Image 1 (tube, rainbow, N blue to C red):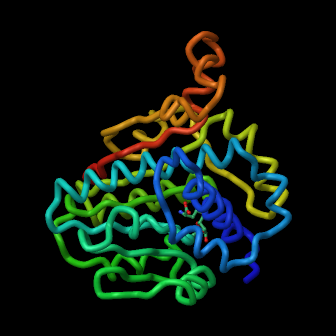
Image 2: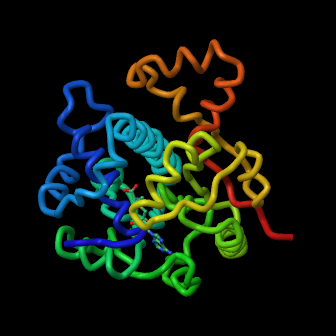
Length: 267
Ligand SMILES: C[S@@+](CC[C@H](N)C(=O)[O-])C[C@H]1O[C@@H](n2cnc3c(N)ncnc32)[C@H](O)[C@@H]1O
């Protein structure tokens, strides 16, 4: 199984989750990720990008988005979770199985791989399409939009600002009041990861100043979680810098933000 372009990047969070599962003090257990990681071929060129810091980044991101998802499912009895650019996400097995309807959406070449590893059921469906091909929205069950949680994890970096804007606009039109959980990177994220992503043929294009750029898309901010300020025991000295150096504080606060947002109506 050899991926190219942006789909190639799904191997990084998959590896991070598999390694997290094996840690004594893991933020979460994920036997599914370990199993899938052992079944796919690791791409040696990603070795220049992947290191312990990235492993922690992805694990904390995963855990924070798991928390948001679990809370959404607990509050909405007939919920639906839609993972956009799902890659080989195993979040369904960590927090969703038996509790909610779930849709994994990714490009056809990625879904072909998922189909060899995972089994589709009436509660856990797979959509093989680009998220930028709006027709997928017709496949979303007709339930009250406030019960729907869309997750875009590690996805929007790879889109132009105009594509993110258009997608959010479409989502707002069709699913007013639904929740969108996502991660966004600031200038620090760009400096740290931009060239590494470009070197593996997956250029990152969209970065933000801070969460106000996301709110400007027509999203209400429900939760704003600076990644480097969460589960700080995993970050070594970085949180110390965060608190004590004013310039670095802002730089690190906005390095990566995990956001829970609500889709505002389109006027
Ligand atoms: C960094 S991976 C993240 C995967 C997954 N969300 C995770 O955290 O494990 C980015 C994913 O976005 C998917 N992707 C990129 N462009 C896409 C598009 N236009 N439509 C749907 N998925 C897309 C890629 O195929 C890849 O699986």
